Image 1 (tube, protein in one colour):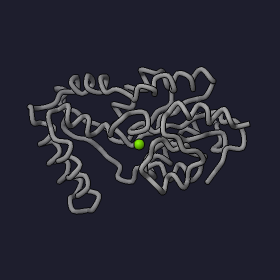
Image 2: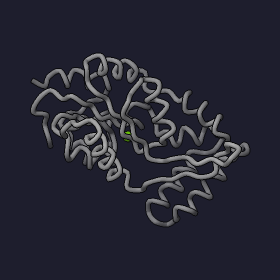
Image 3: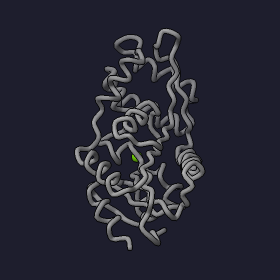
Image 4: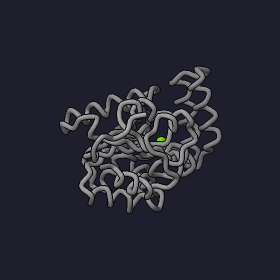
Length: 220
Ligand SMILES: [Mg+2]
């Protein structure tokens, strides 16, 4: 477990199930008229290497196209409409007001992370899955990095390079196993998590987001 040695300058936060209630992928699937249970089942098979990436993609697009082809405009509308946890709005604004530099590092969909960054004027953000569209703007493909934790670490290093911050000047917030790598190099605050492993690695543990602010204030 790493503890902050001085007041951090930057807060690195996860998005899905940390700032949002649910996993954005499943929210998207349901809003497109598909079953998030089927989606979850396919994803489990993919993680177990029972399905290849191209196989799961084919199956997922069948689910997403339940109501016909999906246009980029529809996705933008959905991502704009997916709510964060009620308390996330004030926590993000309070962190900004307190002078912390914020960085979103998420294993979720890049378009969604971009939308949150735009909404809160957060300069630094990274997502995982990139969506691809045909010339008419229909969603036809996506990229995904399976090792989400490792990708997060690379993105964190990009953030450090870009800003000049050192790891010891940062605190990370997260909830899941894809935050393990990050929590092993910066002090982490775990939010309402089911991951015992992440809890063990974390410096602080909170059930509700606003407690993060109080925890940060305890650092000398
Ligand atoms: Mg998460």
